[in-house]
Length: 236
Image 1 (tube, helix red, strand yellow):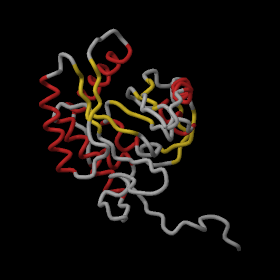
Image 2 (cartoon, one colour):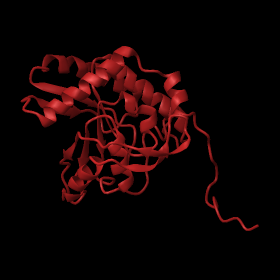
Image 3 (cartoon, one colour):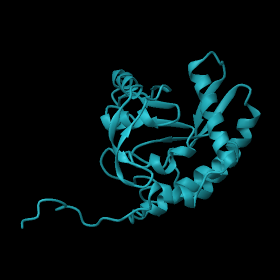
């Protein structure tokens, strides 16, 4: 019979299920309490009359883990000094959206050599998030692939959807089920209507295709995320 599918697929590599990786690299009780507390505090700063600034700061992406940990230690010390005026959150970005081609981030290519060892990338990303939380520093990341949240989202205090994906129905649906405050960036041309539309969509209950913690294809049903907001990232 003539082949009609997977014509351009060279290889399919099985990954550990999210539940297997969460069991291999579990969060501690202290980490879970810290993430919950940080998410509540972020909500207060964005949506109530708390006058402190929320500062999300850090490298464009994590590629050198030792340098990232050194940065986190330094930032944690500064965060404690200014906590009465500013809540600092460290950017821990593992996924890189590319306009054409290029390195796609620590999760997709952790060895920076094109080997695309995604299983190792997921383990490194999850381990790094735990290290940052243990310093008493909240974590922030951009969610790009709709599968990766099942592996790392329980360790993330604030999330972002990038300018290239704010208009994506897949990402709006995914955001509706995420458990943290989340910012939609305005479009690359500077307009912000797409981000407003994304917030409205993510706040509503959604049903969409995804995977469960065992890695099985599933219909994901959400209640909607009430903590979405706009991130003004500039434009052309």
